[in-house]
Length: 414
Ligand SMILES: NC(=O)c1ccc[n+]([C@@H]2O[C@H](COP(=O)([O-])OP(=O)(O)OC[C@H]3O[C@@H](n4cnc5c(N)ncnc54)[C@H](O)[C@@H]3O)[C@@H](O)[C@H]2O)c1
Image (cartoon, rainbow, N blue to C red; front, side):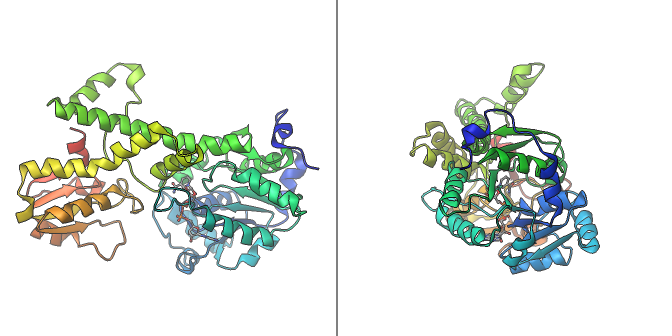
């Protein structure tokens, strides 16, 4: 019988020399390996000389990676991808039999929420069940996707009950900021929640190859830590957005207050600037935490209403100053954050929906986002009577505009 996680952590796990050796018996396999988390992680291991197989269901992404093309932007990733593909250290495949030879398997597939903002666990469970059919006795399986709390221990119990308790399972959350993964993976401590002490030690040996520091937690603690991290950030943005709305109501300049409060005052240095709080993780993980806590997460739910309400607020603000129904409006920047090519859960798309109801014509543009429905920038600049900057990409900074420009972030920032 394996020890429980509590027994596993009654003393700090120690990495054994054998744990390191076990990593040399075969390549690392990353499931979901061509995604925003999986690919930089694969590159980080390959950069250290480890053989990595990226297993992904997207034939398009697999083909791109094997042609040494990045499917999305990550700082400094392209030259490393070219080197590691050329040297044969990194390869991508849709074939799950690649799992069979792996020394360790890391799972980085998506864990979305459904239309009710509840975790869509069905898809993740199906993928995990298929994957676990292929896992060999003695293999290490690391969950790195952001999972619903309790998933690691539930899977470990299922493995134990089906006589496959010799598979070592750990949860090791990803905490990078998208776009800067390769720099951050080398800097950030790695949280490790092993279902058993042995799993914790093996996962630690694995991440020690790329990470300076390991911190051990129980699986439920590591799972909650990841959700707390994203919910904490999301709520902080909401505080600033709510303060912005209050300041605006009383005709006070939020931006000046923000600057004044932070000047030579250490306790307010982390006071976030207001603006769109979007992207594939913050809202989703705040809602996962709410669902986990039986639907009760008042602060998180209030944060969602504030952050998701900003596009409506902006359009109300615009309507007071411009006859939108007579105007062609250009919306510049559709990615969820500046200088990113990722449009997932971007509030610019929500702003587009609201603006579509109000203006005569709406033209949306983003030089980084590969969306065939977008209009090229020169055409937007030529046709628009009014421009709204949804995502302040650096490339907009040097432009001169003939029409009025509303910078969402500047406007929302007061
Ligand atoms: N993007 C981030 O910055 C970030 C940061 C921390 C944690 N996370 C978490 O990491 C997970 C992955 O996020 P992402 O942004 O990399 O998503 P993504 O959509 O970019 O990548 C997921 C990849 O998994 C592939 N995939 C889906 N099902 C598969 C299956 N059954 N087998 C093999 N491949 C499969 C997809 O084709 C895709 O390439 C999520 O749980 C997310 O919450 C993301």
